[in-house]
Image (cartoon, rainbow over all chains, first blue to last red; front, side, top):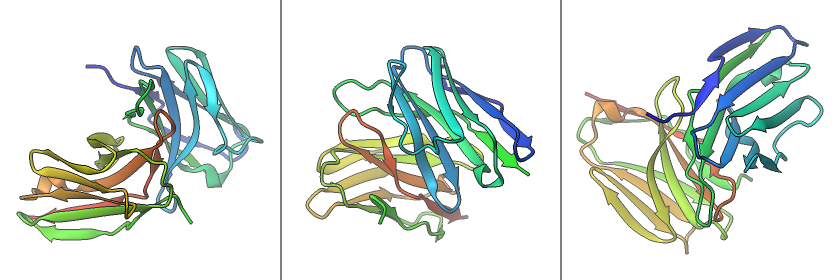
Length: 115
Length: 110
């Protein structure tokens, strides 16, 4: 049963600490998205990659957030330093983007709490 | 103003009712329209996918797209308590990023 795997599922950290979230996309998918979900803003796109190359990271605060794909089986999202306003659920999604649209398959999310 | 607008609800209806969920959008370049369902503490899952204007039916679910009005709808017939979830519309221009609505929280009461 192919699925997107995210770790950790829950993370509580103190303000100022570095946070790293990991995502294993579905094998064969060439597009990876990072979304953040809050009650107030809903799902916001932070960044997305196609064939491991970043295509759009305009939704990401550049001074503290970074997203990478060291290889086709791993995507990472880092926050350094973390702030209480970063508390949210972070979702990774993967899909196949070629020609038509990219249907995104979501992981279970990482629930981040910064205190 | 957001590119995609969706009433967050909450929406509460009795079991068996017909549910209508809607989104409006401002970007006329959107061509692909989707509906995702999200249960509590889970990731969104794709429910319906439509290209351009028209209707698409899948069991109790019907998706409608009216590009001239920039308006999309999802209808749920014979609603069940298991349909209780948050429903998110999403849209894109070809193989580009998906833009989501805020989601409508739906409760079906037995």
